[in-house]
Length: 82
Image (tube, rainbow, N blue to C red; front, top):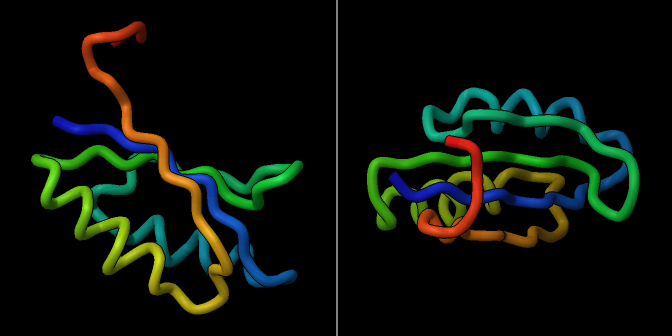
């Protein structure tokens, strides 16, 4: 199962609405507001790479109010605790 972490920037004041929208997606396993350079942290875990790409590209990145994203795809064979 591929895992990705998405760092989201959004328009001021839209954070909670975007968090609620992302939380509805089945592949979104964790969604948190953050302080710092990025506004929202999202953990995505999908059945396959195609499904993860679809969730990120066609679902998350198209939510109104999102201005940019940075996606980190996990190398499953390196590190981690499970």
